[in-house]
Length: 280
Image 1 (cartoon, helix red, strand yellow):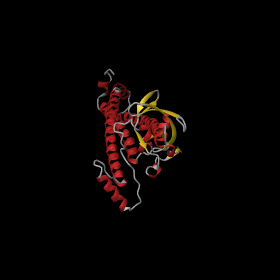
Image 2 (cartoon, helix red, strand yellow):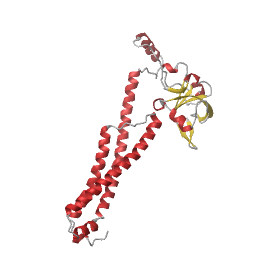
Image 3 (cartoon, helix red, strand yellow):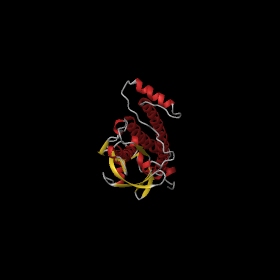
Image 4 (cartoon, one colour):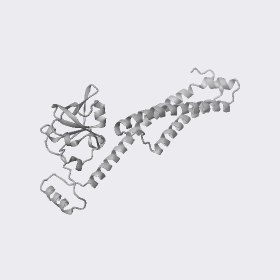
């Protein structure tokens, strides 16, 4: 499925459903329109995708199907749960003949709780069709939780690598900046400033710079996160685990202090007469 986005075209995952009784087996959390109108040349979009396309209920939406066939469909429903079900929902009539197999991937069945006879009948039906399977909602939820956990672990690994490279680059820059102050600190010591006073000056500078950087960085991160979370989930305030706050602020503080205080301490152990003539 391909949609026009920002003057270009982007592929999106889509699902084709039979609108008859769809509200009894899946809850898309429809906010505008109705899935019952998903018949003929119509489409339902998530609120995120509808907002991206600038489409309102009743508008015509241009879409390319999986085999490249262009179609123009009327938007009849907008729903919230695009992250779970996909951003595009079509009826089976629209995609018929435009998929490689033209077969249904899943059949959602709702039974009364504890109806053993219905479950046994479904099990017998599955046995008559090799390659098919019967999965209850509990197993689907467990598999989804496993997939989400694996995805979260991979995301943490990628973020860890990115943060490591960023920290290495920042540490290298800050150490080089501190070491270039050799002549400045030597001059201060030659005019009578003690090493303790120099350290106090550097510490005061670091506190000011660190506080300013945390405020500016936090503001930029907050604006970005609020915008993304608002667009994707509709929530205004993003959730950040307390451990995440502590790790970010603590790691930033530790990095700034270590990469500044250690080089400055090394410079102060050098006699000022040896550093005053060093070219910066």
